Image 1 (cartoon, rainbow, N blue to C red):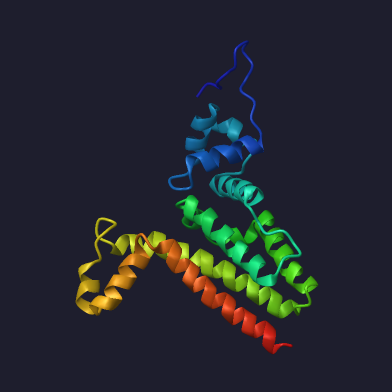
Image 2: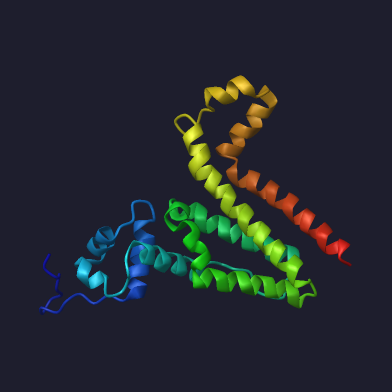
Length: 213
């Protein structure tokens, strides 16, 4: 493939930030080096000067999303801090289908995400929470948000027939009152369902903090 050029014969200039923006705009589902090269108007050899491959593309996109996200500012009440952090994680994953599948365990190797996680833990420590409880609390709400989106994207999407009707296994197994609730939670009530689960988690964390004195 011949390198695309700008007017005047100069090759198109890109940098890692441009690559990251292209990844987010393209989306994480069906992400590939060739797709991002086409989006940027460069050949793959040029793109490889900025990223090492597919996994590096994912890392670049994730880092950009993390840097743009509305993370809580330090100094607020612990519950507000954890609630906003959980909703931020939920929003990033909800708005970027395929991110969890593309990134997998590499999320835990993303420097920007780990820096945010560390800052959230230290915010709680500075409020007098022991490091163990602070880290446990942050990890719990982040896991809750990530696992909720993962379940909705990959397990529930496969179970819901046509994306709307509950599967026959549900109608045969659930009491009608339960069926109504789980069907809504798996469909139009996903955000409401996550809010309810998060409230239970935060209540439990509050009791943990109270018990430690």
